[in-house]
Length: 343
Image 1 (spheres, one colour):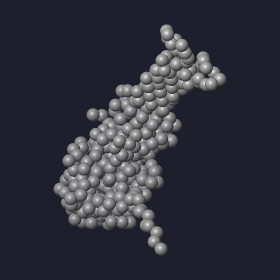
Image 2 (cartoon, rainbow, N blue to C red; image 1 turned 90 degrees about the vertical axis):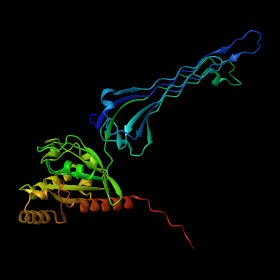
Image 3 (cartoon, helix red, strand yellow; image 1 turned 60 degrees about the horizontal axis):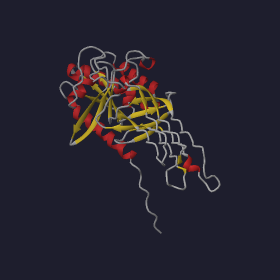
């Protein structure tokens, strides 16, 4: 299945059916009168977050969704049938954005969460509705209300607890394959990963979701390489794992490149907790490893973990550090219970 995280959709709710002008005329019945029924309501357009989806590919091939209009009212006080609603099924983490591509209408992050995108038009009143003591035979009815037509964007941001960032060939996919059941493509050339990958990671009886996005290069915020189009998929993460290729001769430059691209993309993303790890240490001798670790510590001003995605060395310590940050973020997000007042 192809991965698609942005789709443009055209929607229109159904119009309401018109009211009916009708008079009761039956043989052997002395008193007649108005009996025109109301029109049916038009169908509405909804969006609903469902589990089991991780792409918006369905909306590449079908982009127009028009709900049916309500049927007009009929005589004998019969109300017209209402139009059926249309429900757009979207993956968890989908943002509904207005046509201006800036205004967020809704952010669907919980299973079953629904939002009304276009309300169906109300049906018009039949002439029975206008009967009064002074107007015993009204000859007018209301037309149905028109539906709503609009253009929206669907933008998917994968829901993950931790995100992997780094230059191409930093070993992100190898790391994800080593710590989860995910099987991303691994090869010895840049941009092996073309779409984000998700994996469930287990450590000390706990589980969390990790996202691997395509590698960033210098100038990604200006559209170079695959650009920063996939950074949205780590916006929801509690913590970022920044992997630096230990075999690179420019590790401090590599580190600053990624930090610079995160800051250029969004201040909120740059401020997220980050755990820094020097990867591929199995390919380095002790002297080179020590030198590059000290250089990276000086550049980052923090702790540098030494890991190898190929051999598994140091991975458990990094996962424990990630899990600790995730739990801290979840705890901070929990609502604070108000203490009951006591005299």
